[in-house]
Length: 495
Image (cartoon, rainbow, N blue to C red; front, side, top):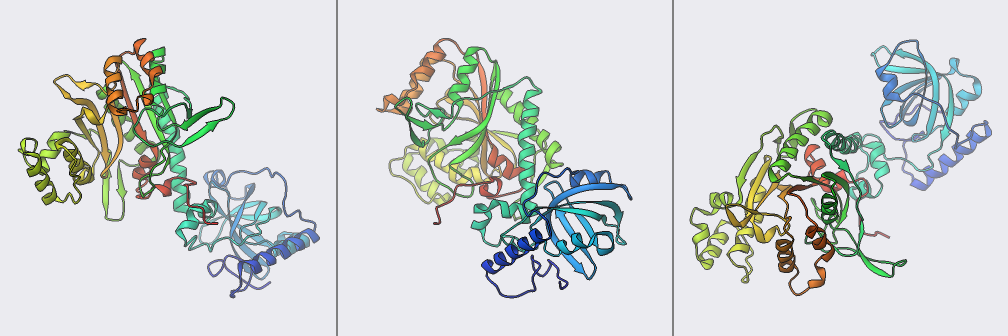
C-alpha cells in the first residue's frame, strides 16, 4: 500500500472526495481481508497494561503488552509508526516487517484508523526521545466500520459534539480531560464529606409531590400504584426527614429535574449536592464551602487560580471569600436612599441604571430583587457570600435574629452566577406551615403535610446547602457552556 499520514487524512486511503458510504465500504472490504488472513475482526479479551502505567514505569528493553484504538499511522515501505490510545494515555508503536511473520505484516495493511489492536513488544526510545513499543506480535481486537473525525480538527459541528459525544471524546483531548476532571471532582466531594463524618444517602427521585424548591416538575404516572408522580425538583424535604430521624450529618449527590428552559447555564436535568448538618447553621455551611472548594482545586485542578471564559478573567478560590449583605449590594448600585424611595421614583431610577423591563405590578420588594438579579449578581465575579436576603424569597429558612424580615442564609455567587445557597434551616413547624401556605396560595394541596408532620416530631437546629455540580465543574474547568460539562445533554429530536 502507498505511504499515508493521518495529518492529511484519518484513513488508509489516498486523499480524494468520497462519501462516508465509500469509506464504510472500504472498511468492510478491509474487514474481509483480515478474515481471509485468519484474524477475527471483533476479537476477545486481551490482557494488557494500561498505557499510562507503561509510560509511568517506562524502562528500555522491557517487554510489555498494550491495547488501544489506532489514532494515527505513518507507513514507510517496510515499516510503520502508529499511535494508539486506550483511555488513559496515548503511545507510539512501531511495526517493522523484519520483526513480524509474513501474515501478521500483511494483515496490518488492512488496519484502519479507529480500529482496536493489541500489541506485544519491546520498549525503546526513538532518536527524538519518544517512548515507543517495538511490536513483535499483535492481535486485532475490533473493527471500526465508520470513518472517525479527522484527528486534528475533530467534530466541527457543535450539535454533533453533543449528540455524538463518543466522537468528541475520541478526538478532543480537552473535552476528554474536562470530563475526567468532573469524575474526579465528584470523587473528591465524597472523600471530603465522608472524612468529616457525613453519610451519603439516597432519597426518592419519583415523588408524590414536588417540594424543596419553586420549580415546574416533570409529570409521570406510577402504574403499579395507579398514582400520578413527579420527578423530584429537589431532595431537600426527604433529607430533612433523615435529620428528624437522627442521622445528624447527611448528603446526597444526584439528579434533579425541572421542566424549564435550556440555555448556556441551565439544563432541565442537572446534578446537585445537598448537605444537611444537625446543630449547624448558615455559618457551618459557609465553612464547608470554604473548605470544599480549595480541596477540589488542590486535588483535581492543581491551582486556586482558574482562568475562566475568553476574556482573560481569573477566578481565585483561595479563602476566605467575601461576605456582603444583600441590601448593601443594592445600596452600592442604587444609592443609600433606595429603600426609602417612593415606588414610582424607584422604578425611574432602576430604568436609568439599566433595568429594561419593569412590570407595573411589582412592589418595591420585587423591583429590588429584579435589580439584584439583573444588574448586581452578574457583577459579582470572585467568590462571594450574599447574606441577609428578604424572607419572601427563601421560605425554608430561619429569619435573622435581629430582623425578621430577613433570613439567615447566603447565596454563594461566582462569575456572576449563583453556585449554591446555604441556610439556617427552618425547624419550626408552625412557621414552616405559614411559609408553605404563602408559597402555595389557594393551591393548598401543594403543601407537604407529611413533611410538616415530620417537623412536629422535632428537628434539631440544622444547616443546609445545595451546590450545583454542573456549574461548579464549569467554573473549575473554565467553561462557560453547561453542555460542555454534561456527557449526554438533552437535545431536540433531529429526526
